[in-house]
Image 1 (cartoon, rainbow, N blue to C red):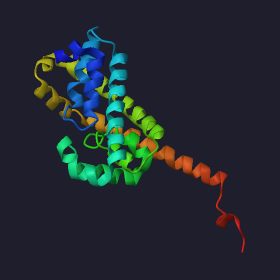
Image 2 (image 1 turned 30 degrees about the horizontal axis):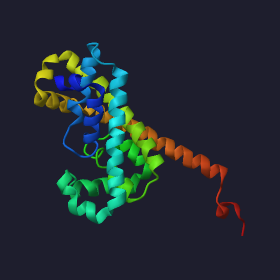
Image 3 (image 1 turned 30 degrees about the vertical axis):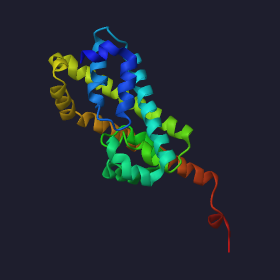
Image 4 (image 1 turned 60 degrees about the vertical axis):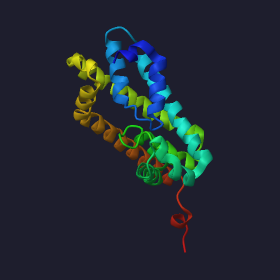
Length: 213
């Protein structure tokens, strides 16, 4: 994984931008090696996380505007040529319909949906500012968690740096820690939303409940 060190923060940003536009560049071959080099003093861990987060936002923004401008029919017809199968689009579509803008934040933490969730956001004309905020927050947490996780795994098994396939396999085998982390964050977000709705209901009770017959 010496290419990460060779291209530095710009390379991390560019590769994570591709990863967020459904191009098959796994984040596992970008962030963990960069975190390993940071632990060796070759890079700065905060720079790694920032570059990866910015790249994720750039790639997500490209997907957002792609969907915003072209609309669903063209995406479903031609998306397969840029690694966006109809099944992936429908999965992301259902997630966005169920959870709305907050689903963008949670989806950025989950494998299999994080890199295509920008499409329904664009198709449904979600405000770009809100989309960007949710994307940066979710991507930032994901990149930081993957950097920490990758540093721990590669720190114990540095020989994996010479075998990308084995490294991805090991990271995925231990990825249940990351998934568990994402689920905890998602549960906390849902709890926060419920509490906010209840607080708003108390501040603004419905007319029906306050009126008398």
